[in-house]
Image 1 (tube, rainbow, N blue to C red):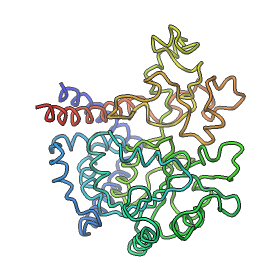
Image 2 (image 1 turned 60 degrees about the horizontal axis):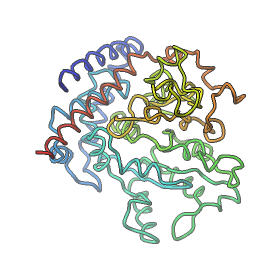
Image 3 (image 1 turned 135 degrees about the vertical axis):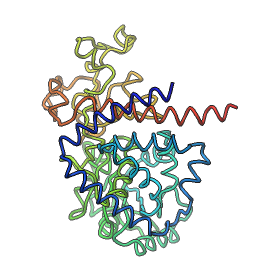
Image 4 (image 1 turned 135 degrees about the horizontal axis):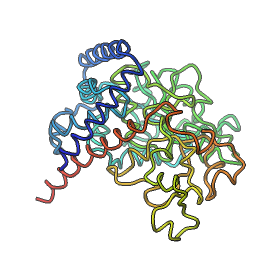
Length: 412
C-alpha cells in the first residue's frame, strides 16, 4: 500500500517539476545543478566537524534503508521547489550536513523552537539529520555553563569565522540600551551579543515568531521595546522562519539548502523562504470546501464543529497567513491546529499576537488582511495547488513509510 501511494506521489512530483522548469527555464536549472555539484564536491573534501557520526551508518541503525532515504530525499526536493533531477544531490547534501557549523543562541523567548527541534517527530530522516548536524553551541542543550560556556562559544566563533550559520531564537529587547536581556557570566546584552556574533556569520537564521518579528515579547505595550533580528542586524543575509514554534522540517530545509547551494534560499518580502512560506494556509486547508460552500462553525461545540466545518467565523486566520503547516503538519504529519478544531492564529505573520490572536473573523477587526482578502486565489501568489498537494502527500508518504517500518520492527 505504501509503495503504491508513493508511486502516485511521484507522478505529482513529476508534474510539479515540469511546471517549475517551464517557469524558470532549463538554462537556470542547468546552472544551478552545476553550482550544487561544485559545492558538494568542496564539502566532500572537508573533514566532518565536531559531530563525527557517520550519516549512512546512523540512518541504517535507526531502521531506515536506502530506499526509504531516497523517498525522503525526493519529497524534500519537492519541498525545496526543485525539479526531481536534483534528488540525488539533495540526498548527498543530507550526508554532508555535518560539514557546516551551526551556532544557536537564545534571546527573549520561551525555548519553544528548541523544544520543537529536539522533539521532532517529522519524517524520521529529519530527526536523524538534527542529530548529525555540527551544532557547535546551544545555550539550552550544551552541558557547559558560565565562563566555560562562554569559552566554548568564543572558540567556535573564532574557529569557524565567516563559515557558521547563526541560528537566533527569541526577540531582541532594545529598551534601556538592551539591559532587559543579558547572556552569560559576563552579562553581555542580547543586542550586543547578536550584533557581535552576526558579524562573523555566513548567514543568520531567525527561528520562531519572536526572533523574526518580535512575537509575544513585542506585543502591546511592549515595555522592553522588543524587536526581531532583522531590525537589529544589517548588511548580512537573514532568513526568517516564523511560527510559534517553527516547524523542524523548515529548519532542516534551510540548512539543507545552504549545504546544497552555499546560498540562502529564495525569500519573500519578509525574508521568509518561499519553499515554506509561499503557500496561504486557507488554500491548502482540508476545510476549504466548507468555506466555499458557506458552511461554518458558528460557535464552539455546535453541529458545524462536529462536522468539521470551516473555522473562519470563530477566528481562523488561515485566509491571511502564509505557512506550510497545513501541508507539512506536525508529529509525523499526523495533524495541525485546524485539524484538531482550533483556528489558525496567524503566528507566522508580523504582529500576530496583537492582530490575529482572537476568536473573531478579520472582517470584524477593522484590519486590512495582507493578502487583500479571502477572495484571492493561490495562483495570484505564484503557486499552483498541484505543487502544494504533491509536496504534502510526498512528505506524509515518506513519513508514513519510514515511521511504519520502524514501528513494525519494534512490535516484532
